[in-house]
Structure formats: C-alpha cells, structure tokens
Length: 379
Image 1 (tube, rainbow, N blue to C red):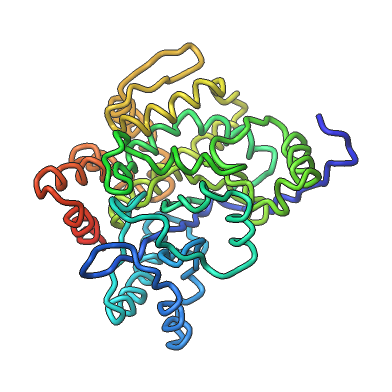
Image 2: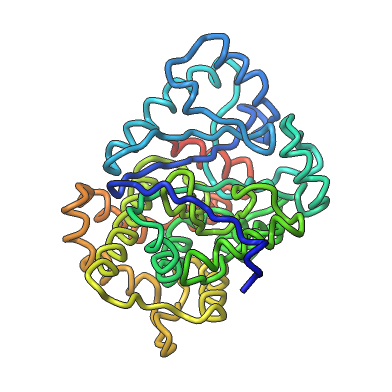
C-alpha cells in the first residue's frame, strides 16, 4: 500500500440508476480509394458552421481520420441506439458532401500509419511524444459502454468479476483481422495493439477503493498520468461520471450489432451489481487466467475455448454465451432490452465482423472490397 501522503481521495459521483452511455468510434474513408482520409477538420468545420443540433454528441479523437459519436445519459439500450441514430444521420449528411464514408471496424485492412495526421491539442501531442512508434501505430477503433453504479465500493468488485466475461464481449465484437495489407491471424488485432500503450490493457484487480486511490497517487507522483482519463484500461472506473466504462469491444459496423453488445454489457454489469447487493461474493479469476482469455478471444474469436472459472474449467465461448443469454433473460426484461440481448445469438449465427471480412476477402480477392462491405453495413 502506498504511503498516505501519496494518496489523494477520488470522489465517485454515484449514479442513482444503472444508466447507459455509449461512445462509438468510426473511421473516415475515401469514397473512391477506400483508404483512410484525414478529413476530421473539414468535417468539424461543417458541424460547427451548420450549428447542428447534435454537435455536442460528435467528438474528435487522436487522429484526423476518426469521428466519435457519443450518447447522452440513457436508460435503455433502445434509447441509446436512437440517440446514436439521430447523430449518425446528421454526420452522414456532411460526410456525403465531403465525398467520404464512415467505416466501423477495429482496424482498416490496408491503411498505412505513416500517412495519418494527429489532431491538434497538447493532450494528443504529449501522448505521441511519450509513446513514439507504438502511439503512431494506433489506427484502431472501438466502442465504449458506460454503466452507472450507485456506490463506489461496488465498482472494483464488479469490475474484477466482469473480467470473467471479457472474452465473450471481445469474441462477439472482433472486427480487426487485417493490418497494413496483411491477414494477421487474429480476430482482434486491435486489442493486442492497444495494450502496448502505457496504462492500457487489462486493469489491476483491486478490491477496495482505497487501493485504487493509492494506485492513482503513485501514477501521479511518478508522472505516469496527469489525470484519470489517462488510465486506458480495457475496463475502468469513470469516477466523474459515476460509471464503470467497458472498453473491450472492437469497432462495430452497424447499430443492430452495437445494440446486442450494449445490451449484453448492461445486463452483465447490472446482474453483478444485484448479486453483490444481495450479499453474494462475486466470482473472480486470477490475472493470468484473465490474460489468457483475452489472448484466446483476440486470436480465435468465436472459436475460442475460454477459461470459465478459478478451477480452470474450459468451454467453447459460443456454447457459454448460449447459456449466459438464457441466464440473463430476467435481467434484460427488467432493463427493457430483451430483444437486443436475444440478438447476440444473431451475431453468432451470421458470423462476427472478422468472419464476414474474411469471406469478402477470399471471395473478391482484394481489400478494397472489404472496406466496401464494412461501409455498406452501416445503419
């Protein structure tokens, strides 16, 4: 435990209800070449110039080839999808004017990192200055889901137990099988790349809020971070919002699949919250098992055999998902996302994005067709 002098209290602004917030990163691609295009500046000039009603829901990101759509505070998955749909419609009108398309996947199949431009701002410049080659490689896109928690002392036990389901979320969302013109052999190359950044990757499995505060104190004292947003864990507390933020998923190409992933995340967090409130000790796995599960899901996607518990029982991830969906049905009914949760099975039946991309590549024989297919799925 860090000395008290290095520990600064961190206020957790508790959420009265398990509300939702969703952040959806999309790449900008040229309509003809299908390569990434650094068009965020002209896009945001149009956004500001037109005074779009939803402009506060549209954010810049590290690179100028990216736009992020962000919901407000939502009660249900359906509300979040409607929120994103309204923002998407406004953005697409402007991208049509610019002759560019929106692309939703974890990586682009053939873009080169050296041609990408950094968004202006000291925060981004400092990140690249520190991370150098690895930072410049981050041509990656994902989805972040916030779920409200009503007391700070629940956050870390729920977070640690939620890691048991990390491979389920990653396998379903995996959409980054190609990189710089090459088949990587991974369903999710994005998840493997992003963990190379300092403070990124799997979270530490703290049990008490004081441990998290001590960790943050050490990080600040040694100059590793200046603020909490620089802790880039795959699942992290967001104290200023009163949420757990799940950042496991690869980029997603359409709202139907996004709704399925958001509903599953919402149900998992709320289920764990309710079990903890009822006095149950939440199940957890050792960090080395969690790490192995992340790798298996990234490598094999929906064909991954995952570790289920601390006794090292194993099972095909799709078989475990089938049972999990049944178990979560009562939770989904309470949260108003029964239909969206059930649609998780449609991803398994129809193939995850990485599988669909493979099929297009093998059929068409070129990577531009892969981009065409992903762009065509957006709705």
